[in-house]
Image (tube, rainbow, N blue to C red; front, top):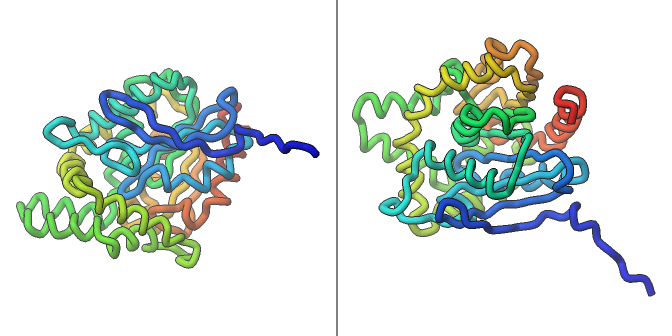
Length: 297
């Protein structure tokens, strides 16, 4: 009788590590001796949004996807004991990178992953091997109607309307809308995605944390020129895959990167905010091709 052996590197591992006084959950797959892709998720999701991509690329790369504090399976300390700001989330992710001794990383950034990731790479450009940007905006041209609506409510001081809009975005209907809106193939969107996000938001303290981060989101806009300057100066290899029908960050946000990155590889899909749910196979192939030919990985 033969005893079957498994290749551990091909399986996804689910781990927890303490960083900056908080427990961070993360998914890891692939051979650590291969090039690392750090997957930074957006709102209202978690590392769960990368579940399929991790499996699709695990034979070629080392993949790591953390949940931010207050998201997914990571701990959710009380706001009186933890600073829920994009500055601090970036500090935690930087410490996470150093704790795992990650170097020469390909950063995959989606939505909130943009302001978190760009803070890290602007401070630590030596960490960057390449950037993979998916519906993560750093140009004012890329602010869609959903963002403009929130901005208008804030500018008008309509705090009741603002709270109602944020509550809707955290409701099951609102979360589903963010996944399905703008898609060409809504039947490809797994209900697991929005039901799991909604489940997490139902846990104690999670909605309060999200409202704090919404209030802090405006801190990102003044940093856009800094992040554009980083791109202009360093010219990292960049792959942009983007759902052009996204009502949060539409396709104009992807094309705006050309101003600073004339050599960026840009692919606009007939999809929405959560592109991987609809075009995960296509994006995985683009990543493999890009990393092989552009980043020399």
